[in-house]
Figure 1 (cartoon, rainbow, N blue to C red):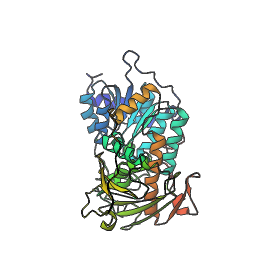
Figure 2: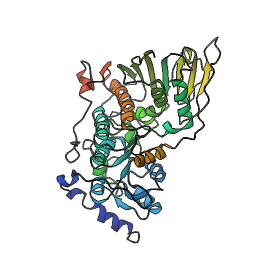
Figure 3: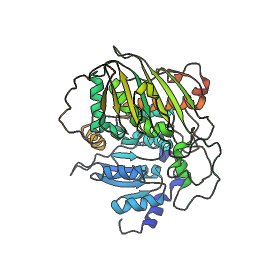
Figure 4: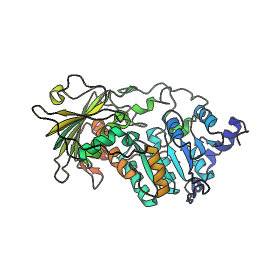
Length: 437
Protein backbone atom coordinates (compact mmCIF):
# COMPACT_ATOMS: atom_id res chain seq x y z
CA UNK A 1 0.00 0.00 0.00
CA UNK A 2 2.88 2.37 0.74
CA UNK A 3 3.89 2.29 -2.92
CA UNK A 4 0.52 3.60 -4.10
CA UNK A 5 0.59 7.38 -4.76
CA UNK A 6 -0.97 9.29 -1.86
CA UNK A 7 -3.70 11.01 -3.86
CA UNK A 8 -4.81 7.85 -5.59
CA UNK A 9 -4.96 5.96 -2.33
CA UNK A 10 -6.93 8.72 -0.66
CA UNK A 11 -9.42 8.88 -3.50
CA UNK A 12 -9.87 5.12 -3.20
CA UNK A 13 -10.42 5.17 0.56
CA UNK A 14 -12.47 8.35 0.73
CA UNK A 15 -14.55 8.34 -2.44
CA UNK A 16 -17.52 6.46 -1.02
CA UNK A 17 -18.40 8.82 1.85
CA UNK A 18 -21.53 10.09 0.16
CA UNK A 19 -22.65 6.60 -0.86
CA UNK A 20 -22.65 4.91 2.54
CA UNK A 21 -26.00 3.37 3.32
CA UNK A 22 -27.47 4.36 6.66
CA UNK A 23 -27.67 0.75 7.77
CA UNK A 24 -24.01 0.21 7.00
CA UNK A 25 -22.88 3.25 8.94
CA UNK A 26 -24.68 2.20 12.08
CA UNK A 27 -24.08 -1.55 11.85
CA UNK A 28 -22.76 -3.27 14.96
CA UNK A 29 -19.35 -4.93 14.70
CA UNK A 30 -17.18 -6.76 17.20
CA UNK A 31 -13.91 -5.19 18.36
CA UNK A 32 -10.68 -6.73 17.22
CA UNK A 33 -8.73 -8.76 19.72
CA UNK A 34 -5.47 -6.88 19.20
CA UNK A 35 -2.27 -8.25 17.76
CA UNK A 36 -1.73 -11.43 19.73
CA UNK A 37 1.91 -11.78 18.65
CA UNK A 38 3.09 -8.60 20.37
CA UNK A 39 -0.01 -7.38 22.24
CA UNK A 40 -0.06 -4.10 20.36
CA UNK A 41 -3.40 -2.40 19.87
CA UNK A 42 -4.75 -1.66 16.41
CA UNK A 43 -5.46 2.05 16.61
CA UNK A 44 -7.02 4.62 14.29
CA UNK A 45 -6.65 8.36 14.80
CA UNK A 46 -9.29 10.93 13.81
CA UNK A 47 -7.75 14.37 13.42
CA UNK A 48 -3.99 14.27 12.87
CA UNK A 49 -3.02 17.95 12.64
CA UNK A 50 -2.03 20.34 15.44
CA UNK A 51 -2.98 18.62 18.72
CA UNK A 52 -3.77 15.52 16.71
CA UNK A 53 -0.14 15.26 15.63
CA UNK A 54 0.99 15.08 19.26
CA UNK A 55 -1.65 12.48 20.01
CA UNK A 56 -0.88 10.17 17.11
CA UNK A 57 2.82 10.26 18.00
CA UNK A 58 1.87 9.30 21.54
CA UNK A 59 0.54 5.94 20.28
CA UNK A 60 3.26 5.32 17.66
CA UNK A 61 4.47 2.18 19.44
CA UNK A 62 1.07 0.56 18.89
CA UNK A 63 -0.22 -0.45 15.45
CA UNK A 64 -1.48 2.79 13.91
CA UNK A 65 -3.47 1.21 11.10
CA UNK A 66 -5.53 4.19 9.90
CA UNK A 67 -5.29 7.98 9.81
CA UNK A 68 -8.36 10.15 9.25
CA UNK A 69 -8.54 13.88 8.68
CA UNK A 70 -10.72 16.22 6.65
CA UNK A 71 -7.60 18.22 5.71
CA UNK A 72 -5.49 16.55 3.04
CA UNK A 73 -2.37 18.44 4.12
CA UNK A 74 -2.33 16.82 7.55
CA UNK A 75 -2.82 13.38 6.05
CA UNK A 76 0.14 13.97 3.76
CA UNK A 77 2.35 15.00 6.67
CA UNK A 78 1.40 12.16 9.02
CA UNK A 79 1.54 9.49 6.30
CA UNK A 80 5.28 10.13 6.05
CA UNK A 81 5.62 8.95 9.66
CA UNK A 82 3.09 6.09 9.28
CA UNK A 83 3.50 4.86 5.69
CA UNK A 84 1.57 1.65 6.31
CA UNK A 85 -1.56 3.35 7.64
CA UNK A 86 -4.67 3.63 5.48
CA UNK A 87 -5.81 7.22 4.87
CA UNK A 88 -9.40 8.45 5.17
CA UNK A 89 -11.31 11.70 5.01
CA UNK A 90 -14.53 10.30 6.54
CA UNK A 91 -14.26 8.29 9.77
CA UNK A 92 -17.63 6.65 9.11
CA UNK A 93 -16.12 4.86 6.14
CA UNK A 94 -12.98 4.08 8.12
CA UNK A 95 -15.04 2.32 10.77
CA UNK A 96 -16.71 0.23 8.07
CA UNK A 97 -13.46 -0.90 6.49
CA UNK A 98 -10.90 -1.28 9.30
CA UNK A 99 -10.45 -3.88 12.02
CA UNK A 100 -9.67 -1.84 15.14
CA UNK A 101 -9.24 -2.05 18.88
CA UNK A 102 -9.21 1.63 19.74
CA UNK A 103 -9.49 5.15 18.36
CA UNK A 104 -7.94 8.51 19.27
CA UNK A 105 -10.15 11.56 18.56
CA UNK A 106 -8.50 14.97 18.14
CA UNK A 107 -11.06 16.88 16.07
CA UNK A 108 -12.61 20.30 16.80
CA UNK A 109 -14.96 20.15 19.78
CA UNK A 110 -18.22 19.87 17.83
CA UNK A 111 -17.16 16.58 16.20
CA UNK A 112 -16.07 14.75 19.38
CA UNK A 113 -19.40 13.25 20.39
CA UNK A 114 -20.44 11.79 17.03
CA UNK A 115 -17.09 10.10 16.40
CA UNK A 116 -16.80 8.78 19.96
CA UNK A 117 -20.36 7.44 20.13
CA UNK A 118 -20.00 5.68 16.82
CA UNK A 119 -16.69 4.13 17.95
CA UNK A 120 -18.06 2.97 21.30
CA UNK A 121 -21.12 1.41 19.66
CA UNK A 122 -18.66 -0.69 17.67
CA UNK A 123 -16.95 -1.80 20.89
CA UNK A 124 -13.82 0.33 20.46
CA UNK A 125 -11.83 1.88 23.27
CA UNK A 126 -11.69 5.68 22.94
CA UNK A 127 -9.29 8.46 23.82
CA UNK A 128 -11.06 11.78 23.17
CA UNK A 129 -9.64 15.25 23.54
CA UNK A 130 -11.21 17.59 26.04
CA UNK A 131 -13.82 18.96 26.31
CA UNK A 132 -15.77 15.81 25.62
CA UNK A 133 -18.53 17.66 23.74
CA UNK A 134 -20.21 21.00 23.11
CA UNK A 135 -23.56 20.24 24.79
CA UNK A 136 -24.46 18.66 28.10
CA UNK A 137 -26.73 16.11 26.40
CA UNK A 138 -23.82 14.92 24.24
CA UNK A 139 -21.53 14.71 27.26
CA UNK A 140 -23.98 12.59 29.21
CA UNK A 141 -24.57 10.32 26.21
CA UNK A 142 -20.83 9.69 25.94
CA UNK A 143 -20.47 8.73 29.60
CA UNK A 144 -23.53 6.46 29.38
CA UNK A 145 -22.28 4.80 26.19
CA UNK A 146 -18.87 4.07 27.71
CA UNK A 147 -20.54 2.29 30.63
CA UNK A 148 -23.09 0.49 28.45
CA UNK A 149 -20.54 -0.87 25.98
CA UNK A 150 -17.88 -1.52 28.65
CA UNK A 151 -15.11 0.14 26.70
CA UNK A 152 -12.02 1.82 28.15
CA UNK A 153 -12.06 5.58 27.76
CA UNK A 154 -9.81 8.51 28.56
CA UNK A 155 -10.56 12.24 28.41
CA UNK A 156 -7.59 14.11 26.92
CA UNK A 157 -6.84 16.20 30.00
CA UNK A 158 -3.16 15.27 29.75
CA UNK A 159 -1.90 17.45 32.63
CA UNK A 160 -3.89 15.27 35.03
CA UNK A 161 -0.98 12.81 34.85
CA UNK A 162 1.77 15.34 35.55
CA UNK A 163 3.78 15.43 38.75
CA UNK A 164 2.53 18.94 39.53
CA UNK A 165 -1.17 18.17 39.29
CA UNK A 166 -0.80 14.88 41.13
CA UNK A 167 1.00 16.71 43.93
CA UNK A 168 -1.70 19.38 44.09
CA UNK A 169 -4.41 16.73 44.33
CA UNK A 170 -2.48 14.90 47.05
CA UNK A 171 -2.09 18.08 49.12
CA UNK A 172 -5.77 18.95 48.81
CA UNK A 173 -6.91 15.46 49.74
CA UNK A 174 -4.51 15.59 52.73
CA UNK A 175 -6.39 18.71 53.90
CA UNK A 176 -3.16 20.68 54.45
CA UNK A 177 -4.99 23.88 53.47
CA UNK A 178 -7.67 23.25 56.04
CA UNK A 179 -11.22 23.97 54.86
CA UNK A 180 -11.29 25.36 51.32
CA UNK A 181 -14.37 27.43 50.49
CA UNK A 182 -12.97 29.88 47.92
CA UNK A 183 -11.18 29.15 44.63
CA UNK A 184 -10.11 31.38 41.73
CA UNK A 185 -9.08 30.08 38.29
CA UNK A 186 -8.09 32.37 35.42
CA UNK A 187 -6.72 32.39 31.87
CA UNK A 188 -5.58 34.95 29.32
CA UNK A 189 -7.42 32.97 26.61
CA UNK A 190 -8.94 33.54 24.09
CA UNK A 191 -6.24 34.44 21.61
CA UNK A 192 -8.67 33.63 18.76
CA UNK A 193 -11.48 36.02 17.70
CA UNK A 194 -14.51 36.27 19.97
CA UNK A 195 -17.19 38.89 20.50
CA UNK A 196 -17.93 38.93 16.75
CA UNK A 197 -21.63 39.08 15.90
CA UNK A 198 -21.11 38.83 12.13
CA UNK A 199 -19.89 35.78 10.26
CA UNK A 200 -16.80 36.18 8.09
CA UNK A 201 -17.54 36.47 4.36
CA UNK A 202 -18.26 33.18 2.62
CA UNK A 203 -15.78 31.82 0.09
CA UNK A 204 -15.01 28.60 -1.74
CA UNK A 205 -13.31 26.03 0.50
CA UNK A 206 -9.71 25.17 -0.39
CA UNK A 207 -9.21 21.95 -2.31
CA UNK A 208 -7.35 20.31 0.54
CA UNK A 209 -10.33 20.66 2.94
CA UNK A 210 -13.50 18.54 2.84
CA UNK A 211 -15.78 21.25 4.22
CA UNK A 212 -18.95 19.18 4.53
CA UNK A 213 -17.08 16.57 6.57
CA UNK A 214 -15.51 19.31 8.70
CA UNK A 215 -19.00 20.64 9.53
CA UNK A 216 -19.89 17.22 10.91
CA UNK A 217 -22.95 17.61 13.18
CA UNK A 218 -22.91 21.43 13.16
CA UNK A 219 -25.64 23.42 11.37
CA UNK A 220 -25.11 24.04 7.66
CA UNK A 221 -23.12 27.16 6.79
CA UNK A 222 -20.78 28.15 3.94
CA UNK A 223 -17.04 27.93 4.33
CA UNK A 224 -15.16 31.08 5.33
CA UNK A 225 -11.49 31.74 5.92
CA UNK A 226 -10.62 31.45 9.58
CA UNK A 227 -12.84 28.68 10.94
CA UNK A 228 -10.18 26.07 10.22
CA UNK A 229 -7.76 25.26 11.76
CA UNK A 230 -8.05 27.40 14.94
CA UNK A 231 -10.71 30.12 15.08
CA UNK A 232 -13.58 27.63 15.34
CA UNK A 233 -12.95 27.69 19.12
CA UNK A 234 -14.79 30.99 19.51
CA UNK A 235 -18.02 29.99 17.68
CA UNK A 236 -20.99 28.58 19.56
CA UNK A 237 -21.64 26.08 16.74
CA UNK A 238 -18.14 24.61 16.85
CA UNK A 239 -16.25 25.34 20.06
CA UNK A 240 -16.44 25.95 23.78
CA UNK A 241 -14.18 28.99 24.02
CA UNK A 242 -11.56 29.53 26.69
CA UNK A 243 -13.46 27.41 29.20
CA UNK A 244 -13.20 24.35 26.98
CA UNK A 245 -9.63 25.10 25.98
CA UNK A 246 -8.12 25.94 29.39
CA UNK A 247 -10.89 25.53 31.94
CA UNK A 248 -10.72 21.76 32.11
CA UNK A 249 -6.95 21.93 32.68
CA UNK A 250 -6.97 24.65 35.32
CA UNK A 251 -10.03 23.41 37.21
CA UNK A 252 -9.03 19.72 37.08
CA UNK A 253 -6.74 19.57 40.16
CA UNK A 254 -9.25 21.66 42.12
CA UNK A 255 -12.12 19.41 41.09
CA UNK A 256 -10.20 16.21 41.79
CA UNK A 257 -8.48 17.39 44.96
CA UNK A 258 -11.62 18.77 46.61
CA UNK A 259 -13.79 15.96 45.22
CA UNK A 260 -16.31 18.44 43.87
CA UNK A 261 -19.62 17.30 42.45
CA UNK A 262 -21.62 19.16 39.84
CA UNK A 263 -22.40 22.79 40.77
CA UNK A 264 -25.75 23.71 42.29
CA UNK A 265 -25.76 27.26 40.92
CA UNK A 266 -23.90 29.20 38.20
CA UNK A 267 -23.94 32.92 37.40
CA UNK A 268 -21.89 34.96 34.93
CA UNK A 269 -21.03 38.40 33.64
CA UNK A 270 -19.38 39.15 30.32
CA UNK A 271 -18.47 41.71 27.68
CA UNK A 272 -21.80 41.02 25.98
CA UNK A 273 -23.27 38.08 24.10
CA UNK A 274 -24.38 37.41 20.54
CA UNK A 275 -25.70 34.39 18.68
CA UNK A 276 -22.49 33.75 16.73
CA UNK A 277 -19.47 33.81 19.05
CA UNK A 278 -18.56 33.72 22.71
CA UNK A 279 -17.76 37.10 24.32
CA UNK A 280 -14.33 38.72 24.53
CA UNK A 281 -14.23 38.15 28.29
CA UNK A 282 -16.35 36.65 31.01
CA UNK A 283 -16.38 35.90 34.73
CA UNK A 284 -18.31 32.83 35.92
CA UNK A 285 -19.18 32.01 39.54
CA UNK A 286 -19.87 28.41 40.45
CA UNK A 287 -21.46 27.30 43.73
CA UNK A 288 -20.59 23.70 44.71
CA UNK A 289 -22.41 21.95 47.56
CA UNK A 290 -20.72 20.57 50.67
CA UNK A 291 -19.20 17.09 50.51
CA UNK A 292 -19.29 15.24 53.84
CA UNK A 293 -17.35 17.41 56.30
CA UNK A 294 -16.01 19.70 53.57
CA UNK A 295 -17.73 23.08 53.20
CA UNK A 296 -19.47 24.45 50.11
CA UNK A 297 -17.09 25.96 47.57
CA UNK A 298 -17.40 29.10 45.45
CA UNK A 299 -15.18 28.80 42.41
CA UNK A 300 -14.77 31.88 40.22
CA UNK A 301 -13.56 31.49 36.64
CA UNK A 302 -12.00 34.42 34.77
CA UNK A 303 -11.14 34.56 31.07
CA UNK A 304 -10.13 37.10 28.46
CA UNK A 305 -7.48 38.66 30.71
CA UNK A 306 -9.75 39.14 33.74
CA UNK A 307 -8.20 38.08 37.06
CA UNK A 308 -9.19 37.86 40.73
CA UNK A 309 -8.81 41.07 42.76
CA UNK A 310 -5.59 41.54 44.71
CA UNK A 311 -7.51 41.87 47.99
CA UNK A 312 -8.54 38.22 47.58
CA UNK A 313 -5.19 36.87 46.41
CA UNK A 314 -2.71 39.08 48.32
CA UNK A 315 -0.55 38.76 45.19
CA UNK A 316 0.30 42.01 43.41
CA UNK A 317 0.88 40.51 39.96
CA UNK A 318 -0.55 37.17 38.91
CA UNK A 319 0.73 35.13 35.95
CA UNK A 320 -1.53 34.93 32.85
CA UNK A 321 -2.96 31.53 33.83
CA UNK A 322 -3.38 29.66 37.10
CA UNK A 323 -5.53 28.61 40.05
CA UNK A 324 -5.52 29.84 43.64
CA UNK A 325 -7.23 28.04 46.52
CA UNK A 326 -7.85 29.86 49.79
CA UNK A 327 -8.06 27.58 52.81
CA UNK A 328 -8.51 28.17 56.52
CA UNK A 329 -4.85 27.26 57.19
CA UNK A 330 -3.03 28.20 53.97
CA UNK A 331 -3.40 29.11 50.31
CA UNK A 332 -2.10 27.20 47.29
CA UNK A 333 -1.23 28.44 43.82
CA UNK A 334 -1.35 25.87 40.99
CA UNK A 335 0.33 26.99 37.75
CA UNK A 336 -0.90 25.88 34.34
CA UNK A 337 0.50 23.01 32.26
CA UNK A 338 1.03 20.70 35.24
CA UNK A 339 3.52 22.87 37.12
CA UNK A 340 4.30 22.12 40.78
CA UNK A 341 1.97 23.84 43.26
CA UNK A 342 3.21 26.45 45.71
CA UNK A 343 1.86 26.86 49.23
CA UNK A 344 1.48 30.36 50.63
CA UNK A 345 0.95 31.11 54.33
CA UNK A 346 -2.20 32.85 55.45
CA UNK A 347 -1.48 36.17 57.20
CA UNK A 348 -0.16 35.52 60.72
CA UNK A 349 0.06 31.74 60.23
CA UNK A 350 2.90 29.29 59.53
CA UNK A 351 2.80 26.81 56.68
CA UNK A 352 1.57 23.37 57.72
CA UNK A 353 3.72 20.26 57.51
CA UNK A 354 3.44 18.55 54.13
CA UNK A 355 3.20 14.85 53.31
CA UNK A 356 6.06 13.35 51.32
CA UNK A 357 5.57 13.01 47.59
CA UNK A 358 4.95 9.48 46.31
CA UNK A 359 8.16 7.91 45.04
CA UNK A 360 6.64 5.83 42.24
CA UNK A 361 6.96 7.42 38.79
CA UNK A 362 3.70 8.34 37.11
CA UNK A 363 2.67 6.96 33.74
CA UNK A 364 1.79 9.50 31.08
CA UNK A 365 -1.86 10.10 30.27
CA UNK A 366 -1.60 7.94 27.13
CA UNK A 367 0.41 5.22 28.87
CA UNK A 368 -2.29 5.04 31.53
CA UNK A 369 -5.03 4.65 28.88
CA UNK A 370 -3.13 2.05 26.84
CA UNK A 371 -2.37 0.01 29.95
CA UNK A 372 -6.01 0.27 31.01
CA UNK A 373 -7.12 -1.03 27.59
CA UNK A 374 -4.93 -4.12 28.02
CA UNK A 375 -5.84 -4.68 31.66
CA UNK A 376 -9.55 -3.93 31.15
CA UNK A 377 -9.62 -1.44 34.05
CA UNK A 378 -10.81 2.19 34.20
CA UNK A 379 -8.30 4.82 33.09
CA UNK A 380 -7.50 7.68 35.46
CA UNK A 381 -9.65 10.29 33.67
CA UNK A 382 -12.27 8.19 31.92
CA UNK A 383 -15.49 9.55 30.45
CA UNK A 384 -17.30 9.20 33.79
CA UNK A 385 -14.83 11.68 35.30
CA UNK A 386 -14.37 13.80 32.17
CA UNK A 387 -18.13 14.17 31.65
CA UNK A 388 -18.61 15.80 35.06
CA UNK A 389 -15.85 18.33 34.53
CA UNK A 390 -16.98 19.01 30.96
CA UNK A 391 -20.54 19.53 32.15
CA UNK A 392 -19.32 22.00 34.75
CA UNK A 393 -17.48 24.06 32.15
CA UNK A 394 -20.44 23.92 29.74
CA UNK A 395 -22.74 25.20 32.48
CA UNK A 396 -20.49 28.25 32.74
CA UNK A 397 -20.86 28.86 29.02
CA UNK A 398 -24.65 28.50 29.31
CA UNK A 399 -24.75 31.07 32.11
CA UNK A 400 -22.76 33.43 29.88
CA UNK A 401 -24.87 32.75 26.79
CA UNK A 402 -28.27 33.14 28.44
CA UNK A 403 -27.33 35.85 30.94
CA UNK A 404 -29.34 34.00 33.59
CA UNK A 405 -28.70 32.43 36.97
CA UNK A 406 -28.67 28.65 36.58
CA UNK A 407 -29.92 26.52 39.44
CA UNK A 408 -28.81 23.10 38.30
CA UNK A 409 -30.67 19.87 38.99
CA UNK A 410 -27.81 17.44 38.47
CA UNK A 411 -29.95 14.32 38.91
CA UNK A 412 -32.42 15.41 36.23
CA UNK A 413 -29.76 16.99 34.01
CA UNK A 414 -31.71 20.21 33.57
CA UNK A 415 -32.03 23.72 34.96
CA UNK A 416 -34.69 24.60 37.51
CA UNK A 417 -37.36 26.81 35.93
CA UNK A 418 -35.04 28.13 33.23
CA UNK A 419 -36.32 27.27 29.74
CA UNK A 420 -33.63 29.41 28.07
CA UNK A 421 -30.95 27.07 29.43
CA UNK A 422 -32.89 23.87 28.81
CA UNK A 423 -33.32 24.85 25.16
CA UNK A 424 -29.53 24.77 24.74
CA UNK A 425 -28.79 21.46 26.47
CA UNK A 426 -29.02 19.62 23.15
CA UNK A 427 -29.33 20.61 19.51
CA UNK A 428 -30.70 19.43 16.21
CA UNK A 429 -28.23 17.65 13.94
CA UNK A 430 -27.80 17.75 10.20
CA UNK A 431 -29.25 14.88 8.19
CA UNK A 432 -26.80 11.99 8.15
CA UNK A 433 -25.10 13.07 11.37
CA UNK A 434 -27.80 12.33 13.93
CA UNK A 435 -26.68 11.02 17.31
CA UNK A 436 -29.22 8.19 17.41
CA UNK A 437 -26.84 5.74 19.00
